[in-house]
Length: 496
Image (tube, rainbow, N blue to C red; front, side, top):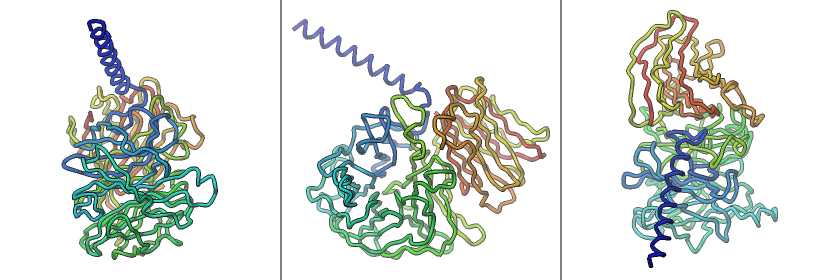
C-alpha cells in the first residue's frame, strides 16, 4: 500500500510539473499571441458553431489535434466570457463513419422544433467523406446535425444523418443556420461551389431548397465558402448583408471575405450592388462568421491566416489563430451602405495622450508600449486627409510600416522587414485597402499582438488584417508625417 501511495505521489508531482511546464511554454512560445485565440496544440482553421449562451461565448473551430498542418477535421471548442480570454475545452465533434467534420453553425432550438429537447443546442455541419471523394462522384459533402443538452459539454449525432444529401455539387458545405420569424422556419445559408443556396426547414431535419444567389455578381476568382446572412436596422429601413468568403481571389492574394448588401424575404436574397466589396482587405482574415443568439448585435470572428501559405507559416506545437472579435454595423457613404467592423478589445490600461502636432514630422510613442510584450492598441484622429506613417521596430532591426498613402488614397501595411518573411513566396510584403470614407478627417485604430496587426480605419470601414513573424516583440513606436498635421484623441492601451 505504501509503495502504491509512493507511486501515486510521484505521478502527481510529475503531472503537476508537466502541466506547469506546458502552461509556461504556451504562454511564452515564439509567435504565440497574447489576446488572440490559438489552440494549445495542433492545427486550426475556420471558426464554427459560434454561439452565446448564458453569459458565455462558445467558439468551435476546425481542428486537427494530431498535426500542425491541415488534416482530419474535428470541431475544437473554446469558451470565453469577454471574447479576449479563452479557455480551451475538450474536442466537441469527432470524425465518424459518415466522414470528417467540416464547417458549420449552431443554434438554440428554443421551441424544440427538432424534438431533441427544449433549448437544445443544435450543431449543423458538413460531413466530408474522403472515400466518396476519391470516387469522383461529387457526392462527398452533405449536411448533418448533432445536439447537446448540457450547454455544449457533450454531443449526440442525429441517427438520421445526413439531413441534407448532396444533389451532385462538388463544393456543398459550410451551413449557417438562423431562425426567420416572419416565415416561421429555419433558413440555411449554404456555399455551393460559386454560389449561395438557401434552404428552409421547420424542424432542422428536413430541408427544401428556397433559392440561389451569386450568378454573375461579386468576385468569382475562387470557390465560395463560409456564408452568413445578417439583418440590420438602418434609417432607410431593414437591410440584409450576405457574407461570402472566397478562396482564392482576394484583393491582397488568396483568401478574403466579400459581402453584399440587399434584401431577404424569407426565401430569396436580392442585391442591387454592382461593385465588389470586401469586409477586410487584409490577407489574414478569412471564413469569418457571427455568433448566434446575440440579439441585434452581430459579433464576428475570422480565421487569421490565408490558404496560400497557411500550412507553412512559422509554428511549433500549434498553427493558426483567430482574429479579434468585432461587431458589424452598416454605414452610409454617398448613398451606398457599407459594412463597418469595430473591434472588441476588453479592458486594459489606457494612456490618454490627448492632442499633438507633428510639426517636426515625428512623434515617439515608444515609452507607452514598454512592457506590453507586443500586445497593445493605438488609436488617434488626423485632423485632415494627409499622409502619415506608423513605424514599429525592435532591437533586432525588424520593422513594420503602416499608414496612409494619400496619392493613391490607400491604407497600407509594409511587412517586408518584419522578421521571417521568406517562408512562402505567396506571403506578400505590401498589402493595401482603398479609403472608402468621405470624411475630412481620418480616424485610425490598430491592434498589435506579437505576430499580427489589425487596422480599423475611418471607424472600421477600411480594414487590413496582417500576420507577421518577429522573434522579439516590437517595443519601438513612432508616428510620422512629412506634413504638419494635428493629431487628436491619441490613446495607447496595453492589452493583457
